[in-house]
Length: 196
Image (cartoon, rainbow, N blue to C red; front, side, top):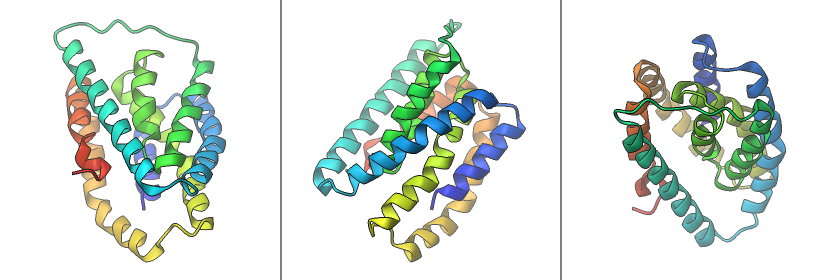
């Protein structure tokens, strides 16, 4: 299960100063309701359409990260700042994606937080975790009520993810932003969507 990893990652970003509290609260609050709505929709949607939609979403995110990383090389990034109150829309969109696909809310949010709101990659990733933290629990509850959670398998997956998750978090914190964008593009690939 991803919930403990999300909360541990969030704690790590918060300890290193990568989270603006008022934005984190707004993102989380706006995401929770939409995560529940997305989860309700997904539990009633046929499997193949959902998988194809998820694959398309992951490919678009990978392309976005790759283009952004290529564009940023050798150039100072000029950051614009949209008023922080608009991050609620990012929270709603991220929550909806988290509910429908059970992942992806933070992946959706990071580029928007960086490009539109001027946060660094590090700050945007920390805020992305703040967005999905409460929604993770909401999503698990929504899927569990629908009977779509196999607890023994999820708990085994959780145990298997402990070391890689901690290692990835430590590596990310030590990495420059453009290197992280390239890695994000590589990890957001068709294999992650279950289509390979």
